[in-house]
Amino acid sequence: QVQLVESGGGLVQAGGSLRLSCAASRSSFSINIMGWYRQGPGKQRELVASVSTNGVTNYADSVKGRFIISRDNAKDTVYLQMNSLKPEDTAVYYCYCNGRLFLTSLIREYWGQGTQVTVSS
Image 1 (cartoon, rainbow, N blue to C red):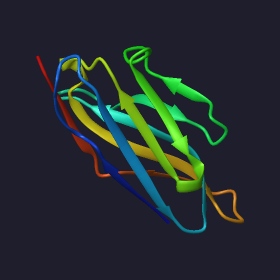
Image 2: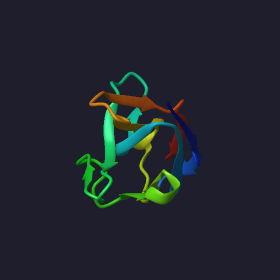
Image 3: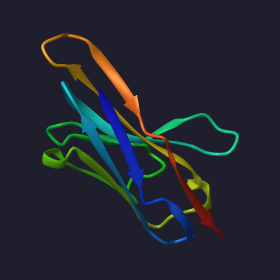
């Protein structure tokens, strides 16, 4: 019921910036939370940031003050502005959303295919 398409990854030098975008294509589904996770080499997947439908945000401590998550509900799109990037931010970044199927109480979650972010020192 939902497809997530990410864009904006790439290679950047330490201290630089990148902006990730994730557009959701949905049918019969009401999105609640949208966000970003990442998985670095040899690491577990971890939450980077999330935003609810009414704009409540949540950030990992490691990115607070550097990353900004935002959301355009009309476009079903979430953005991640990443500033002051560090080599340890190198990871595959995955877009995520959860929500409810229309006219049911069934909760589902969906993932994008991932986009590589590489920060060189």
